[in-house]
Image (cartoon, rainbow, N blue to C red; front, side, top):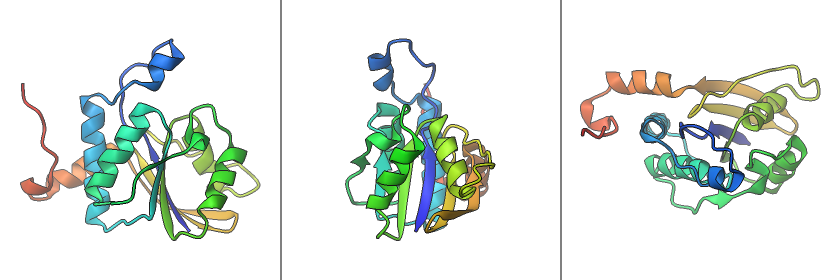
Length: 176
């Protein structure tokens, strides 16, 4: 099984009110980050059978923007195991429900998204520490309980690569 770990893109500053924070949307930079990453993934022919997202607005927006770039047609599935307060046991339980699929994308939050990625690639030892920046995506090839990190792309890398491509393949920026 291939797992694409995608951290939600930039969404401005966290708010103290938990309920309001759950509805915090991506900011303009986050929208661009998600589009750059999505287009880069599409250019390398990434295909997933399911996109799984935290139910929080910024994750759903990131998942939607990237899924659109991938021409993904299946509805995005909201998973509580990807919420900010979730733990690795819930994450593994969620993954077990999707193990029959070849590739899935999981969209969530830090610090748990980085923790889930790190634990997935370090098996039982848990000694790896991989930090996912906002809008970053990592590809992990998971064979049973052992995961191998294939690559990790930040929005900055995606933007740099997109800048070298023809203009029609770059996201549109809004000008005021």
